Amino acid sequence: MMPAITLIEAVNMAMAHEMGVDNSVVALGEDVGTNGGVFRATDGLQKKFGKDRVIDTPLAESMIAGVSVGMAAQGIKPIAEIQFMGFIFPAVDQIICHMARMRHRTRGRITLPLVLRAPFGGGIHAPEHHSESTEAIFAHIPGLKVVIPSNPSRAYGLMLAAIRDPDPVIFLEPKRVYRIVKHEVEDNGEDYPLGCCFVDREGTDITLISWGAMLHETNMAADKLAAEGISCEVIDVATVSPLDIETILESVAKTGRAVIVQEAPKAGSLGSEIAAEIAEKGIFNLLAPIGRVSGYDTIMPYYRLEKQYMPTVDRILEEVRKTVEYS
Image (cartoon, rainbow, N blue to C red; front, side):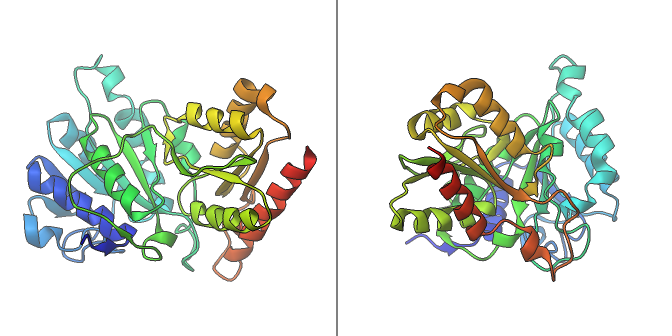
């Protein structure tokens, strides 16, 4: 019988698997070695693989990203951790100017097989800079893949694929669901393809599109709507860049309606891009305007107000009912 593990354990298991079969894979970041990471994503890896392959770094995100670029350019496969996504901005110069551009700059002579991990999103009562959902910034940058798992089995398969990919992958882990759900996951080395959506459940009346932690509220809403006679198709975007718009369009063509659910602020977001793609390429299939349920266009508040900021099941229900009733 396969063990039931959490999302954070699935990430650890995938990293350990690849480090065990490929000596060029290394892990680095702040507190990833002796302490096993702030969320214990790298727990036990240094003891198993040694300090040469699981490397504690100074608190210097720009250095972590820059060293990863250099390692990857020389045949090493680094898995670098940024302790929280809100701390990623000192590394943005390295990510955008070098990590994303190396294949293009060298006309394919040098590729960068690296993974940059970062816990992201709210819901754990964290202070400022610990709760942002800024995935759209990196989805906007050509040359980067951006992956967001929603559950343990997908975290395992997508992490394997990210490590094996020849180009840089930003791997964003929704920390609110690190430990709240368990799946049976076999450590069999089978990856999931990047750039593909997952259809969580099939439906006929409306398409609900989400990713990361918000999949859980979205699926809870779909359960409640099913009891009302509204059949929801739920899509887990999973890889937000490159976006698998074909799967989304196929679903919207079937249901005629779409609601997008995201934790990030609405303005300039991935949800806005998905809505634009549906409007541009599938508008004649729509029976109602596209709905969006988002965080607000303000900074994520401190923990006493974060539940008021983040989309709830009730907000999703309200938007779906309005969309269905429109037509």
